[in-house]
Length: 261
Image: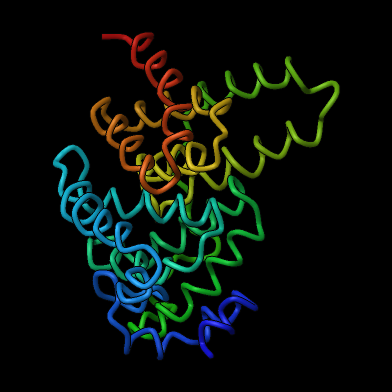
């Protein structure tokens, strides 16, 4: 019966977390798909998950487990894939991602992946937070004191975008200035490097590589190394599909080659 309900509506995926905890999760958690479920449908998929994803990909040294959790959450939220989100939210917390950082990831992706995707993530995360007794004292303030702004870099960005699109699209040019780069990006509870990590992961996972060049450069300016950036794409090949990863490769290669040595 539960499988029928899941097939009818994804909303029950959030409300049935108690049943999920009683199942043989993959590899352990309140994820809604158990290893038993996978074996019943695709036993080879279970083998790949265990042998390649959890025993290999997640153990690669090029990216810390905490970073892999951030990348994975960003991909799931960007693609509105909520079925496995409870497992990966718990894994992120176990890997050292703080509740306030998860809160900021969701908020950040409302702008980069859409309000509806962020709200879907809220519906899942609230149950994970409740189960782990994460209260409002562990969440960021709505309007905290901002980080310092690089005025010269922001003025240069605003000028370039304004010259390209300001006359035809004044609203969409003004919002990034006022809301994104002078507000959202200055929120202090997610480090600039991690905010960049979230952004490039969401762009790659969504197949939106047209915006990848400026954001990958920004990520590396914020401290992401070339090796870590390459490993992000490798990780996302599994979580967002090989085509999206391969679409990102030439863009990233061009960024790597053009950056100062």
